[in-house]
Length: 320
Ligand SMILES: Cc1cc2nc3c(=O)[nH]c(=O)nc-3n(C[C@H](O)[C@H](O)[C@H](O)COP(=O)(O)OP(=O)(O)OC[C@H]3O[C@@H](n4cnc5c(N)ncnc54)[C@H](O)[C@@H]3O)c2cc1C
Image (cartoon, rainbow, N blue to C red; front, side):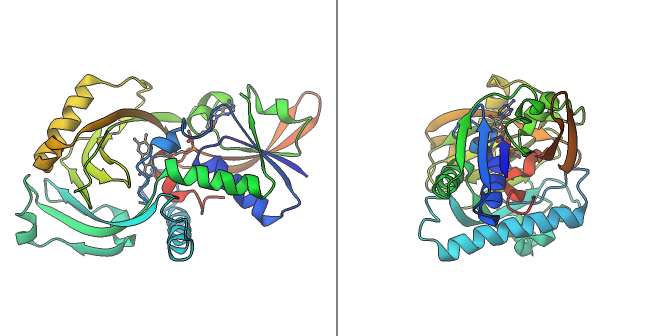
C-alpha cells in the first residue's frame, strides 16, 4: 500500500511517522514544497497548551493535547536525545490586567496554582489575577528534524514537490493524507480557513528561565516572554485574516515596548531575528476522510488533517 503525506510541518511529519511505525511494510512518502526550517511549525514557540479554537469539541481537544503532552513527557524521561529534540518543561506565569475567569485550559495544565494578592503585586505591570502552571515545550525547529531523521531511518521517503491538486497523486498512491496547514485554504478550497498572523522577535536572554504572559485585554495581541533553549521569544500577535508575512515596524515597536514594561531586563537582550508566521486558523481542526473523485482513477482516499490554528504543536501527537 502506497501512502503520500502532503506537508512536512509538525502535522505532516508526525502523521507520516505514526503511519510508518504502525506498520513497517507500508510505503510512506512525505511530499512537500518546503521542509524544515521553512515551515510555520519551525517558527512556533512550542508550548503545549490546549487553546480553545472555537470549534473542536473540548473533550477531543483535551485528549489530543494530553496524548501529545504524555508523548513529550515520555521522551524526556526515556530518550537521551530529548534536549536535541527541543523538549523541556518550564514554569509559566499568566497574569491578567483585569479580574476575569481563568481560561478553560488552565485547569488541565500540570501544577496549576492561582496567584495570591501579594504575589500579584510583585509584577511591574498592574495585575488583577493570575496563575502559574508547568508547561511542556516542544520546539518545532529542533523536534521536526529529529522526527524526519527517524522517519527516514524507518524507510520513509521525502520528496520535494508542489502539489497543485491532490487528485494528481491518484495514479501514484492509494491514500493521501493532507497536512498542508494554511495552504489547504487554496489547495482544497476550504473557505473555513483563515490566517492568524503571528509576529515575534527572538532575543538572546539566557537569564530568563520562565514563561511570563500578560493578558491586557487586547484582542489581537498578548504580551509574552517565552524562553526556548537557544533564544527567547518576545511575542506575540494574533491578527485574524491578516495574510502579510512582512515584518511590521508597528508590531515590532509594540513587542519591544510592552515586553520591556513587563520585564525591564529584556531591554538589554540582543535581538537575534524577527519572525512572522501565519497560523492555520479554523474554527475546529479538520480531521476527516474524503473520497475525492478523480477524472481518470475513480476515487482517491484522502484523510485531511489540518486547521490546527494556534495548537499544531500542542496537538500533533494525539490528532490522528
Ligand atoms: C508566532 C507563532 C507561534 C506559535 N506558537 C505555537 C505554540 O507555542 N504552540 C502550538 O501548539 N502552536 C503554535 N503555533 C501554531 C503552529 O505553528 C501551527 O498550528 C502549526 O505549525 C501547524 O502545523 P502544520 O504542519 O499544519 O503546518 P505547516 O508547518 O505550515 O506545514 C505545512 C506543510 O505543507 C506544505 N505544503 C503546503 N502546500 C503545499 C502544496 N501545495 N504542495 C506541497 N506541499 C505543500 C508546506 O510546504 C509545509 O511543509 C504558533 C504559530 C505562530 C505563527
